[in-house]
Length: 341
Ligand code: ADP
Ligand code: MG
Image (cartoon, rainbow, N blue to C red; front, side, top):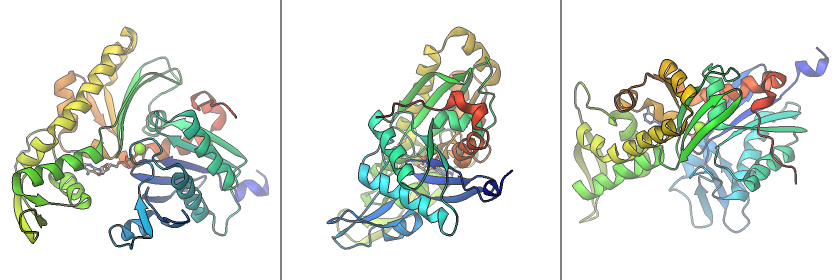
């Protein structure tokens, strides 16, 4: 070990549609913030990122925009996504030497151009060597699946913008399906429910809190009621209504069904030998959506397969990306070999 390796600041990054996490080699997870950026509309200069940008949501004047640049799983706003990533990396590096090597996990649906943009922003932030890995592969490594062996593994990563379903064997993704139905769509469904059934307008953060607290994919042992504050659509005045866990489940059910259908579709396309492996090993859920109450049971009922929830599902991707960073030679085969322009 040379002197430099002691001060090495190589990074692994989970550039998620909802959250960005950064893992510093030898140290672990050093950043976990929402993938949000605030910028000046006129100059497109980034003003704030992460938690700080989230605090500005809904509180800015007309010159400042606050957005989630990766919202739908692909890069919705290129320039801002790149700027946000660069600022996150800078934040880690204050006082440390810039990283030589960066591994970034990207949604499996990103285009060549988007991969190039991610690569470029990591390079602009000082990295000499940038590697990309697909999110479901990173999640599988993060939860400790044997991705190198011949046995098939199925991982379902439910994030904010996308649900990514992949069957992995021999260091590669054999079959994958990516749909734009995940946490954000569930929030939208909850917003629609309160508008249609209670004449109540609620914000995205309220909807998300309701989903996390009482949202479910199967009947609960004890159904609960929840007080929901919003604005009356008829007279515009703030009001409180009582919602039930049963109605929230009903509101979420169409999205949940679409996730289940995508899993079944992936299973149907999977080669028979690998299906047999999945029958033994089951399906692993990761990403924030893995925490939806009863989702594991629902998937088990509809597929007749064992379903496991990853330990700490929100950090699975960054932990897997970190493992790759720390043993690059071992994991060379799982990295995306994207073209250099
Ligand atoms: P991404 O990889 O797209 O950044 P994450 O894996 O970080 O997404 O997951 C974020 C999503 O998970 C959000 O939509 C959030 O609302 C949802 N989520 C987080 N915790 C819970 C929970 N306890 N129950 C249901 N959904 C949750
Ligand atoms: Mg993710």
